Length: 247
Image (cartoon, rainbow, N blue to C red; front, side):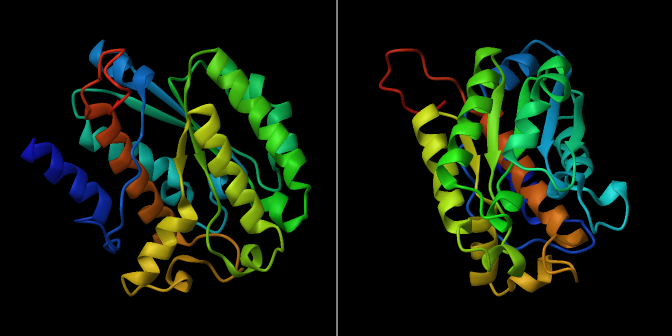
């Protein structure tokens, strides 16, 4: 157990990376299909689905995208497994456009885990929060129907998003969907709040366009996400009927 905790901590803080990441609280993920694939020595396929944050605009190159860093971190943490992270981010899209390509870009790949980053463009376009909720719920329903683990990812604390009147409403919608549909939530906004409280301002992780993350932002996001995934798959499943604890 101490070895696992040390490994998670190293992933989380970016120990050994060019720039270490501030500490933050890890989300508690429930990833039964991913855990089962690892237990069966099956390659784990992760689809990173979303818009320009997933495509990782403003990163200096593809190797500094969050999906690339995530794949490297997961394979380092799980050396007896092979994890492939497929980048299905398309800049400028949000829930409506992403829902229309869900079958081809996600379901057809047959991943064990889907990380759906959504809401930034919707916030800046002032999309109706109720419409946003219906679209995301439809996508989550489809992903759950084919048995995939789901992690929803909310928005970064970037000036152009914070200036959007409905950004907080969309963030609340994702949190409600996570609770009601029992899927995981990676709160990127809350993560950045914790970084700021630790002495690193939002601007340290945001690029010059005042919207996208910079290399450090993508790196620290991916490391925190990897640490939470590793912690989630290492947990011992709780038998059905045992009060719903853990998992």
